[in-house]
Amino acid sequence: MSGPTVVILAGGSGTRMRSATPKLAHDLCGRPLLAWPVAAATEAGASRIVVVVPPDAGFAPLLAGFDVEFAIQPEPRGTADAVASAAPSIDRDARVVVLSGDVPLVGAELIGELAAATAEATMVTTVLEDPAGYGRVVRDAAGAVVRVVETKVAGDASEEELSIREVNAGIYAFAGGALLDALEEVGSDNAQGERYLPDVIAVMIARGLSVTTVEAGAEAASGVNDRAELATVAAAAQHQIQHRHMLAGVTIVQPATTSIDVGVAIGADTVIEPCTQLRGATAIGSECRVGPHAVLVDVSVADGASVGPFTYLRPGTVLEEGAKAGTFVEIKNSRIGAGAKVPHLSYVGDADVGEQTNLGAGTITANYDGKSKHRTTIGARVHGGVDTSFVAPVTVGDDAWTAAGSVVTGDVPPGALAIARARQRIVERYAERRENG
Image (cartoon, rainbow, N blue to C red; front, side, top):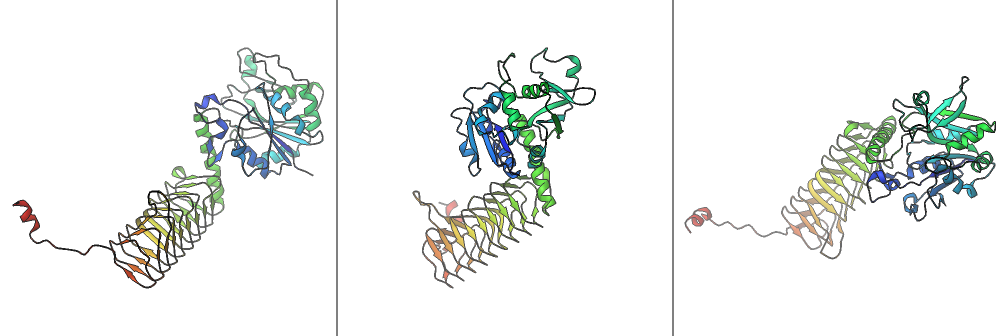
């Protein structure tokens, strides 16, 4: 059996975000908001993912790497109209799941449950402590859905209906043919003059078609309309991400102060210390220790490596097995070899450091000459003295040494000692002579 067609509604201006960035382009734990339901649909095995967008939305870059197609809704005329815009992509024999682009925590499991439903329509509902603003699900004495009552305008619902705490989560599954037929009967006779998807449910009930519900937790139905709601959803997403890693054998010492993006991979028996941020496509092996107060962005850390505290690993950094980036160290676009150490107070940028090398405190790779970046190559088992600067491009051979305080501007042969500093000179009685002029 092929997977469902998933239609994702990505309209709406998002004015409540108060941002020049479109709402669905805002970041949620390392992934654009719109990409979350797309990723869930992909994981659920969707045979087709159709994203309904306004003209000139420019959302394609947000979904790079996903197999999606776009349908254009020429004017913002409501959710039913948006689904109708995707009608050419809907097979009458297909199972169709409809999601909202700004409801990001819908999981693949829920999509799979909806895809397996056999009713002509299945609606996801949730029970809220404060259901204000949500459409209420009205049921008859037998528990069957009678209708969904909107509550956006005063007078739309009675007091009795307003007391209902079960709400429509805005997530649906339909038999393709039944959906297409019902869409033709949905009108726009309301205060906003728009066509709404819950009216499809009403049409199907009137036709005697089967309508069922699936109850989901409030988290799965949480939408994002402003930055406060984005922060609330981000906290829930962060909990999901960290919980998944902890169940896989990762120790997160202080989850409340830790931030891990959704695309991060972490091996078993790794310890994440407090106040650590793991961002982007960072991949950390097993039996590593990261933090506290470390930031890793798009980096690769092999098994048994150590990072931190107070370390910043920037994109393109690779720490090989057993390597160490110590306290107050910044590394960018560099490979640190197996067992190599950059212990503390150092900046290593655009460099290749060989295995078992030890760079002393205060090591700097001067990689930028004002016009171009250059690489530094440091061989295996090199012993770098404290306060050494390597002015790129420069190559240091295996087993070489550098004297403390050196500014290395030329290549160093294997096994050699580089001394690149001014000779010390002593001026006797300098303080006395300075005082007396």
